[in-house]
Image 1 (cartoon, rainbow, N blue to C red):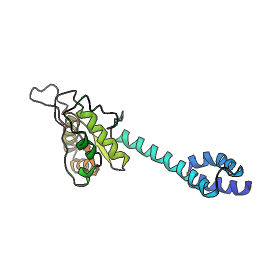
Image 2 (image 1 turned 30 degrees about the vertical axis):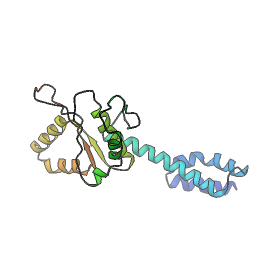
Image 3 (image 1 turned 180 degrees about the vertical axis):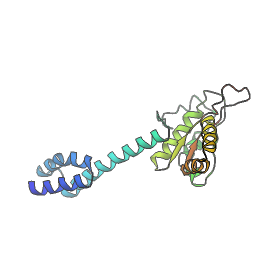
Image 4 (image 1 turned 90 degrees about the vertical axis):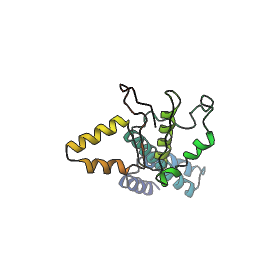
Length: 183
């Protein structure tokens, strides 16, 4: 049996499945004790590897999207903002607006949860495999202006257009009097 386990180990290594490789010995022990069957063992190894990769993908995507620290709708205090329609916000988390290429705005005074909700929708989109990018309006304008000066405007527009969800949490223009926070 150790020859087969060595072959499996080599295959997992070659397939770059480090989490499954890490779990192999424990899984084989459980198999030998009769705690699990062969199909359960395969399922367990593949599930461990899949979950590990998915966690890593989501972590990288959240960092790339600038959605750290991540916030979720589950952590949003709807009692703090009773004027919000909870069902409507939860419906937004289904991300149908992304599929329809619609724009969602959260408007209101500072401290009302706009950024939290925008971040939570971005996190939900990342978890569903969508590409997301978050920046302040000032950062977007600055980046586009710089790209135009450097002759890379088309490239920069393509970069932003790739994102399924581009979130601007604040206008980022605190020094200007006629500026309101919007998302």
